[in-house]
Image (cartoon, rainbow, N blue to C red; front, side, top):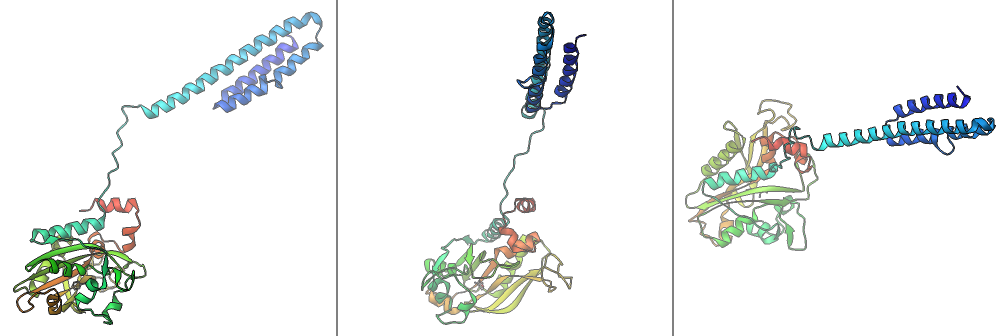
Length: 347
Ligand code: PHE
């Protein structure tokens, strides 16, 4: 065998190994350039022809051309193989009709919306109407008409976002008591859910934007027992049949007597002394309630000797904390889909 033929044979073997090892188009092209490219190894062999006897040159030229053609076929075959492999991979991914279908990602109703809806539904079943009102209110509806005149210390307790001297973002839903009574004569039976705003520092129990559900019942002969019954029923509907509810004496200018309403802590169910959720008290506060103050009834033109009523305002986030056993209120506004999805499966 001539020198040319034997170096071509060795070169073809190395090329074949490189082609075999090439796993993509780029590696293949690198191999081609290295062996068959203008400055590649075959070119070096071609140049060596000049040193042969003139009679041997045409034969050597043909040997080189044949070897190059063979090597190009090896490259082409591999290129076609790689391309077919890629197409196959793509197709396998796209049109495997036997592949199990992906279940569609369904949204869930936000836990705050759900407690509000369920609380409203409970009251609607008892003959209450659901009413909605503005989030920007004059101080008259937020305070004056609720027996909190200018300068009254209770105004401070509501830490409000003021828009100008008289307008503010409502810090509670109680303005809806006034708006409803101004528009309708007794009997009144309404619930008013909605957003409220207070300049509170955000922590595990507080948001500066939150939701309340207000309730108001006014008629002849209404008493505190009705209030206790309705709110205990609400908690048992939302949280379960054995849920306890506690009324603690308190003060609100627009109710007399007034109470703060607590329910059993879902985490320790009232038994643990070092519970992180309720601080060991066994109770979670839901909001305030009481018998509507006669001054409030008089303000809207009602006869406070003929009719009376009760009102309450519960924090919707508090209801959701207890219902879903969540220990940080901020989780409700984090928009974490895993968290929301998980709660979405709890009834
Ligand atoms: N509006 C009161 C608050 O936000 C709660 C409340 C409503 C209390 C109705 C009594 C009656 O603190």
